[in-house]
Length: 609
Image (cartoon, rainbow, N blue to C red):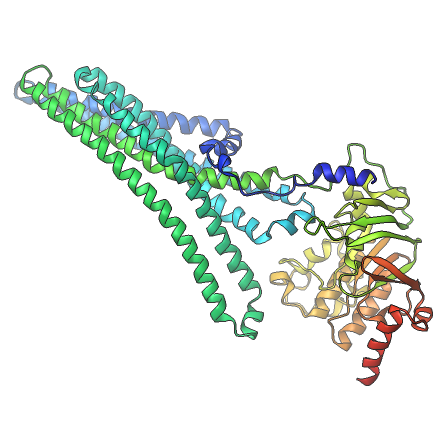
């Protein structure tokens, strides 16, 4: 086994995210560390938010109760209440300050929430672009998309609202409790009895609630993935009249989501009811005892009034904490799911010291005793002991039945995968020793279905060479027989082509893909039979464009229609992951092997037609 296998095994599994195990679920809120890592990049905004948060909490838990005590003791309690206006003005001033700092807190906390979510989305997307195709084979792109939307929305709520509420209530609970002990220690000591009654339910329900919250997010992701899948295949759904079945399947997924959410809601409801009952029950007992102390003259009316107000603040703060805990746990679940995407490592990466491909490029491609198994099918070799030498400028067609390994050849040339045994080389350099980006700079690819993006015609063309000039764009379009229909578009090259280029016909999409490859101007060309699904007129235009594209380039063609590869320098016939024969069309067609049988079938049908 060569070096590629060793490095592949070292990286194997890193590109896959996994459902967390039970012990992972019990790590509670630690997953939110990634949110803090993003937030701390904005220290000025965090500082302003924290100052405003601290001021509003202190005013609510300390200043307002103190003002209430002064109003009762020195306002109502003074001769004729002559000084009462002074204390109400003091209270009014506190209200104005509270309102101003609340606005400041809301702005900066919301700003941080939006900024953090934007940064996380960008970081996750940037990391996804690094990952190898094997990652997306093992992990559904639809689920990944759901994580990028639904989970980030939860984190936005957590950072922009929940964390602020939690911090504010923690501060208020601490200071209000301390104030209660300062006002009336003999009453506040009773609060110590209620603390275990609050902590125990949180400990009992917390881990269970987080597990249910994570499960709830998984169910939501399943619903989102199903919607994307069905909508993208709506024509097939309707063509086969499967609307009823898809509706039932979606309804079942929604019900599973609801059942999970119902469990989460039930746990939160029980926890909230229990804790609030205990807290407010304790407050009632304290007030009862306080009223007796007022009657006995041990404390003033202002003291009991402030104690009541501060007690309500403390109780409300503790009660709010039990409510926001569920949201924080949901946020932790969402953060853990996004962390898995953010921490995923590509299986295919540049070595520490990549070997530079020779300049100028020659365009030779070599397979030497290559054996490769896809990560999702490790028990079956897609190609085995495969050897093939392709000279610069040579056109080699690869034919064979489905599953023969034709597409795998392309995947290995572009280094989307590394073989477990053997080596693939371009211009004599083993691909595992080179930078994947440099490898792909030397390759142009025209897929079978002419993949386009939801963008303008200009941007789809520029994918081949983003710095191409206007003249170069039109030269490529003319060479690909695409200029005529591009000129007729409403805004020319700036016309939006719709979702995946759906505003163009299949033939137009193919010609645009060929123009894109022309702009690439790479020495090696990979063609996944670009004319197999086209009508005769479109096929002629596309084939004419392909002939121009193939000139003076090393070309590998996956051929589904043998009529399109008669002029190839060499035809390689594959079956069961290996080469069974190779030669020119004339030599192979006159033989008795697999190619001759395929040719007889195809050309016989064409003659009959």
